[in-house]
Amino acid sequence: MIDSMTVSSSTHNVWRARLPLVFAILALLVFIALPAFGVSGFTYRTLTAMFLLIVTAQGWNLIGGYTGYAAFGNVAFFGLGAYTTSILMFRFDLPFLVTLPLGGLIAALYAVLIGLPVLRLRGHYFAIATLGVAEATREVVAWWTPVTEGATGISLPFLKPIDFAQNFFYYLTLALVVLGLIMTWYLSRRKIGYSWAAIRADEDGAKMLGVNTTASKVIAFALAAMLTGLAGSVYAYYNSFIAPEEVFKIDRTLQAILATVLGGAGTLAGPIVGAMIFQLVNTFLIFGKPFGIDLGQFHVTILGLFIVLVIVFTPRGLIDLVLRSAREAQQRIAGSGGNFGQRVWAFIAGGARATRTILTQNVRQFRI
Amino acid sequence: MVTNEIVLTTQKASKSFGGLAAVEDVDLTLRRGDIIGLIGPNGAGKTTFVNIVTGLLPISRGRVTFKGRDITGWAAYRIARLGIARTFQVVKPFRNMTVRENVAVGAMYGAGGSRRTTAEALRKADEVLEFIGLGNQHDREADQLPLAGLKRLELAKALAMDPEVLFLDEVMAGLNTKEIEAAMDLVREVNQRGVTLLIIEHVMKAIVGVCRHVVVLHYGEKLAEGAPAEVLQNPKVIEAYLGQKYAQQLEARHAKN
Image 1 (cartoon, each protein chain N blue to C red):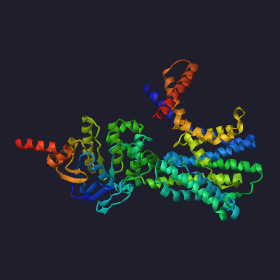
Image 2 (cartoon, chains in turn orange, green; image 1 turned 90 degrees about the vertical axis):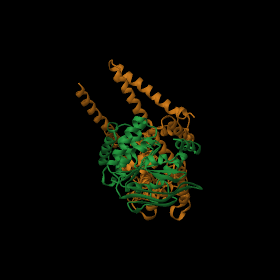
Image 3 (cartoon, rainbow over the protein chains, first blue to last red; image 1 turned 180 degrees about the vertical axis):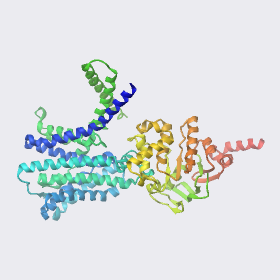
Image 4 (cartoon, chains in turn brown, purple; image 1 turned 60 degrees about the vertical axis):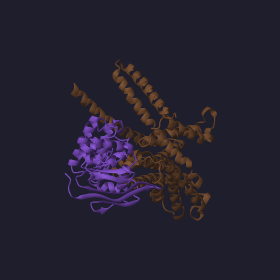
């Protein structure tokens, strides 16, 4: 009796461990196959924008999630990637695919350069310093007219024909998401991943165990910048026009943070799930015109409100909330007998109750 | 156990915060295999001393050597990788990790870390946890351990680094009598494995029971040193701990006897 129980529970565990992988592969297959079913230009644009957001969120997740350093200037890397591609294509006629890795590389080098001084700061100081660096970078780009064309911006040739372009950018950004996912997955289980988690929990403690915290943090920052720079690089060609005000807009940083925190910072799936939900809500607010109101103008306000709500109600993210609720609900049906319908009901009721408990606990932490 | 080989020395080690001298001119010699106690009233500078030796705080003046090598001013992580480990007075587990993963970080980055793969470090963590008596707890979230468990976890993280010298900063504070007995046995066992120890402790029973030699700090300076029983009888030490008045009373009583 006992033997059969342990066996079944261990096979169950193996399955449960593989479930995320199965899910990820299924989702990937759906996204790969989707264009074959004929989707509209609007869907292409929405999904491509979503993939780009996922990549910037995956970038932020490395430094802000795994390492615990709340970077507020990641848009600088997006802008640098975009400008690297634009300048190289515009002035030197380099092919886009040559400029793409350079966009990521330049952003990463920049992160090393600013990371060495800025990563000595902790908490709010680090957040404000990165914010300042991003603003300063935009100013430099806006004023360095001989190279960047200044505030006028740079126009790039369209990729033609349009059908090809749609598929090209769709699959390229999807590939970047996969790159971000595999990179994060791989690194999070290597020594470097452990050092990030240790730094996030207790930086002095990590130092005393022999972790070169400066090196670990700079690597996290540089890899975050690389992903963000690659996204910026693709964006430049995809949009075929860039200007400082647009590619260095702080909204991009905020959206990446929000998407990551919404899904779950410091988790593999967090930025992906968060960015998907965010993009859905965002598209609905802008194009759906709920109750006939055009919410476009309140866009940033709603974004800010959203950040506050997420941090108050689910600081560990929606995935964590759902998984914990499901786990408690499962324990509840284990105790309840009855037929299938009763068990399903017990699961739903138990899950809802568990969710409410977790949310209440989270909110209570904010009472002073 | 104690040999003649000198592992670690400090010469006139000093640390001041602005005008306040927290540690002043402390000379200390650790021989391989030794167990030295570092005691003194609260605020005497014991933890600050460990902080400047291990590089967590920059040293203001003085010299630190490890196996004949001058390591003054080295970054904390480099000192740690040489084989000098420490525990923290206030236990700080990595909250987002399991007990095993906590210890594995020490095995990955400590003295033997560069030789180990991630998987080997995790195996090493299991070995250390077995030794330390947390063998059945390795999959628990670190912050779910009770205090005695957290203290053991601190020790396990340090031991996973394969240290030659280990500073134990009040590992017994907050433990009950039975737990202290167990901790003392553990400390002796660690020493028997060849680790040189410097122990900061307020639990005098542990100091007397475990240490060969005791150094007393008071207002950042070395007040006395010697065999534990002897040092604890020293009127200057009693005065430092309990105040002048009580020390005089005690002396008068001794004189009468």
